[in-house]
Image: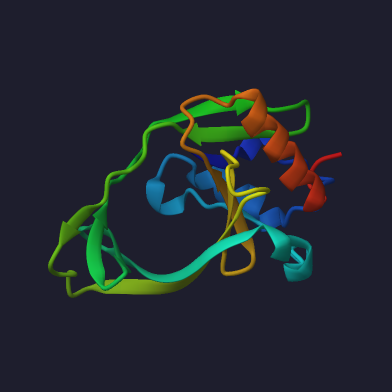
Length: 170
């Protein structure tokens, strides 16, 4: 399951970048435009250092035929338009949850007409057996992943801890 911040769950008075609110609000229906929340000057590598799990790079290609990704020397086509469900986390914060994991299809080509983005992915867990993973993209975008199919108490506690560390939850 992937947990994104919901466009309705972002306050105008919060620490989030305002253009992210508009970006998510205007584009929530397209997988190409569902963006993790952008953070500015919140993430401190030293603060998250003790929770670091893994780091890798991917190249993501936006083409007329869809979204493609190169990771670990393999090319994948990313399926479009995942089903998202609304989840009210608190009075101030809500999430859009993608319950089904997108199954990437390995392919052997990338269409000729494309634009690409290099993404540096860092993953953090509060402890090795934690069910929730904080994903940091290019040191300024975050979203969460969990193998759970529902938001359990354990996942909720980890969410609160991460959001508190990032000063996104009081």
